[in-house]
Length: 174
View (cartoon, rainbow, N blue to C red):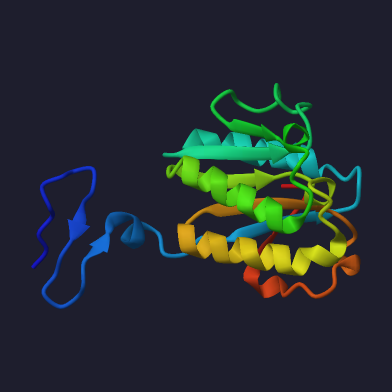
């Protein structure tokens, strides 16, 4: 027997055999981190912009696009929140960057996807930081039910220490 609570903005499903679960927990159990990997000039940024604009057409919540500067502002639909990292020059390492992402998520609980274009150009994130950084994004994705799409400007053979089984690898040309 399921009885919804009266407040429609916070629906709870209660059954006599299970504990109460929020609708957001039931609606989607698995979120992921997707990676777009390729050398400079292979079209990663254009693909990211296309993916973000397509996602916004289907989204029920917010989409965030984190970029190095304001260059892509006019390529993205106006409904996508663009965050330019040049405006946050005091974020200087991957730990601070992760804290920044927590801040973005806490400011808008309706975020569905966060696009991070060219992560190696942000906050002095280095190739050696990627395994830990991507692992932490994966944990955030699972905990807060957010999708991340991250582009990495590198040859896939240069990426060491990353367990790619935890990530969806996107193709550059689709």
